[in-house]
Image 1 (spheres, rainbow, N blue to C red):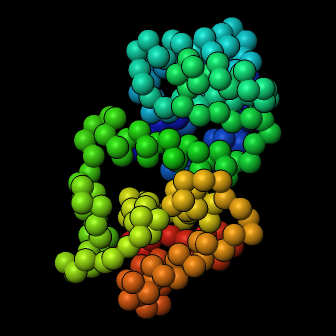
Image 2 (cartoon, rainbow, N blue to C red):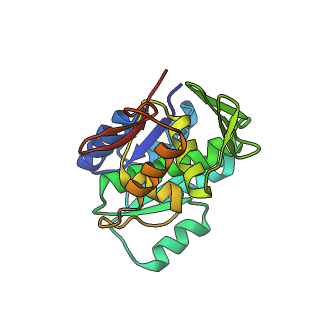
Length: 228
């Protein structure tokens, strides 16, 4: 079942841009053009993550955030043209999980959205964590943080494990180098950095992979884990 994301922003161009990328990644999207509409949608819809513009008519993003936090701990990301530290600190103090400053790179926005979704839902904040993932003859034990091929343990570094888990949680989905780097290393991606290419090469060697059997290169886009 796809995660449902609320995009609340009075700029239709921002809503349309985020909808395009979110739906491409398999999310359901609902939109609000002001704070009051956002609150009504939150009351009537089962929202998994909210993106809130700060400067909205009716109720601003901070007020909507306060309303959310009275009832829910879903991930909330603030969006604003403001880039002052005081604005970010206020949002975080009120319970925001992340902050996007306009203009933003939509790929960075998606990386942050995916990261917040994984962190909240995969780590058990809502529901139970999946204990085992299987793709082809690979098996990932989330409790032991171990990956097996035909019941043979594969020796992986912590970075390699996080990237493999990301792949195995989303077989068939294409991830950019930036998304893989930020998940694996937990820091901002540098365009000139070739760490992902090296990491993928090492993973393929450890998996004894032939002809992109597990990790497929999608030219010009990134990589994906092949399905069954």
